[in-house]
Length: 191
Image (cartoon, rainbow, N blue to C red; front, side):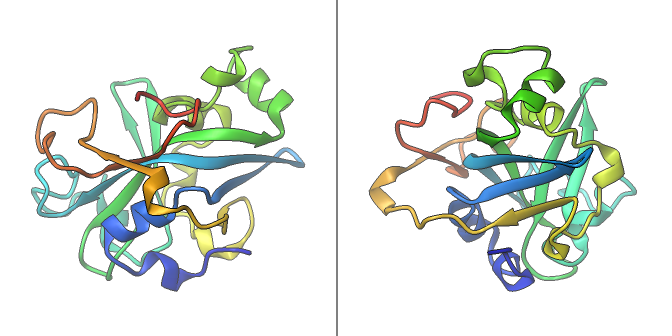
């Protein structure tokens, strides 16, 4: 079942948890590439690590728009990262999708990732955008349309099966417990 806009129109920390075990679907060249979401990180406007911390810019304007849209950005001059906009219009929040477990279209994902091992295919933000052919053309895309790029419902996750930690790879706001992942899942980027 396609996740509706109401799913995304909630607090970023709630959505970040609830996205675990859901499925990110990418329609690519007539094929479905699907990964189960196994790791997320939450970002909100009052968070110094958030792109919107200093206000609205051309780069982050999607974060201020309607929930349920893709926020894709280019970083370090070589990588794309995929986020899901959450909360209310005008309040910049997004969930970074950090890692996926490959489910469908694995041969195509392997080709897009240059033949990496299954464990390495989608186990990081830049890896998953490369493996699912997500780039700036999808920035602002409405994930609730149910075509090209969208998220479908997964099985609920028991609280004891969710690990909550601080975020990784950042300095500002690094002590906030805003990273969530599925316990014992081998596709998580870093335990």
